[in-house]
Image 1: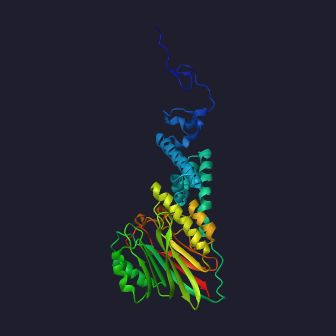
Image 2 (image 1 turned 30 degrees about the vertical axis):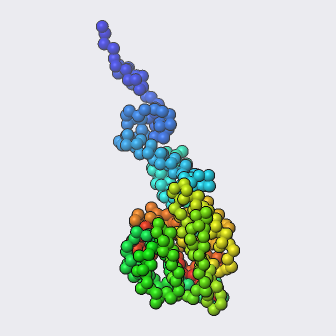
Image 3 (image 1 turned 45 degrees about the vertical axis):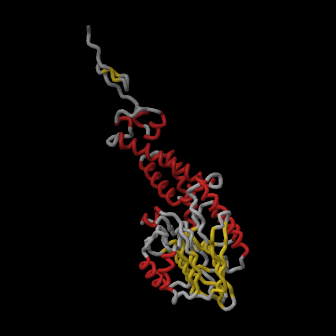
Length: 372
């Protein structure tokens, strides 16, 4: 039997056949993305563009993982706009900064691998989230300091009821020296330890309670009246303080709606935010709403609160200023759920976050001017 030459199945050319010039194989010149989309199984580096042949399978793995990440971020970004449909969709609305960072990383990988179709999708996701994040960094119009006004410095934090770092927090308050101090998740041990600040804050109202619903307000400014407010079907306690300066009243409301992770708490939080909006809307200006709202800047329930009250977020022009969870250390892993909302007649000079005082929330400090 005569010997049959081995035929190369890729090109269909016998070893014995004289080699002729052949056009470039469409497979050999296809991009990684085109190969994956066509269902071709990668078995050799020849199937990659020349510049990627040395890397081979590793490039394909990177591309597949990046495409999966890009699709996930795109779907989560879209889901966040439907937060009123279901609590998990609302939960996906809180991470616009993280989606922005992941979309940018995916876009850079796609560009490097010349996966242009995927790069287009990642670019859309990037700009979709950029539109949600960038406005918070745009400078606002300067405060009108020509009219008669007075300055107020407000310090707010959720101290976390299990936190025992009392002395560090007291030192922090003394360093900042605010006119108004508000703490949430105030328990009786916290109230007892903060009695050392009574000379500094002669006006106070404390509602120490377990399970993270306690509130306390301390003021250097005269307080005309404290009112305890009940919110939602749970009758959650909130606090309204009417500060009086020269006959002009500044209303300060502090609320701490429920953590919405459990379904029952989700409904209760939304009820409490709706009731808060109704109460604040009825108050005369100037007015301030401050607290751990358990809702980010992109939650539809936060948006409803802003629309109904007509308040502005004090962080406008100062960035996202994420506050939770503080143990993440890096701000780009945190989300902004602690808020100071002010009526349009109040000018915010500066808003910033304070140092970690042992809580899972960072404090927020707001300097503002109040019209006389």
